Length: 408
Image (cartoon, rainbow, N blue to C red; front, side):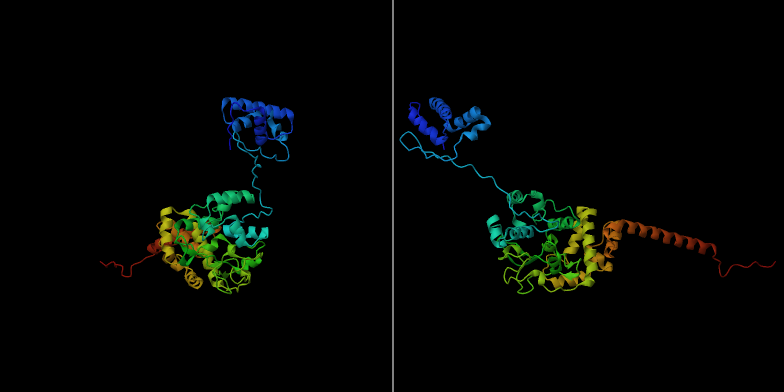
């Protein structure tokens, strides 16, 4: 706020204005401030800007030391002055006392849930205080400005936090194989798990899966980002089926809706611990899940965008955005090497067809090139043997009815 100084103001009025703008107990400083105000009043310039620049020029870095510790009372208002009171300086944002780091492949809402637990606050209240009304699905609706603010408060980079989101342009998630696949499926837009019903933005409501064994054995329990996608049906580490709802009441899984502080994720409705859910064994589907994950990594990094879209179009007919865990488990069980073309379509280039069939037979990615090379050498060897056999047969061939020489 700028006050209006008249050129004919008395010294007493100027002194009262100086005390309102910058109170000080130093007589010499008071005289200098009064001299500055006289000059400003004579020119009619903005007194606030001139006063600040003059203080920096006169006192330099010692200017803050000239200020008194207490706040002076504002000067009384009269016809020629406006009462001003010095404002306290703005407080710089401070970081949280407890600052958990987002784990690799961790979902953004899972990290926010862990931050609430570390702060000793119910996740529902913590999310409301920190984010406010962030939308129906914070993993898809978080704004870039919110990510930057949370990164400052937690001592992390915005890209690290953005790696756990499900926005259209995720940043920092593609540093692992799972992240590369998730980004590719997210850009496609057809493989996020959804349920019936629409949110406020008209989108199908999202679904978060979980593995009770992972939550129970994790040193730091957290939700994986890949658990939001339809191709993730089986936990490969524990050979069990992923759950899509609370195992007690059937409510949707929502970590940030939890109303109690617990180091284990709980159902927001019945407060049951998700790690206590029954384990549904799926040993026969584990090789299929491992093969599907390897094939998706291959499609995400080794083929062109046009070929990837062609293969994902075929895969979407089987998975799409299906939410029923049993149906997806049965579909996954049908992913046999002999039916690979029905799942991914016939590859355009023969070299991709060979590699996809190898991956469908549970060949790992790190051994794929060696296995393909061995397969090609074996094929060439068999072809060479077949050619040698053909030549040998031609050389040893004798007609059954060879013409006989007639006796003359």
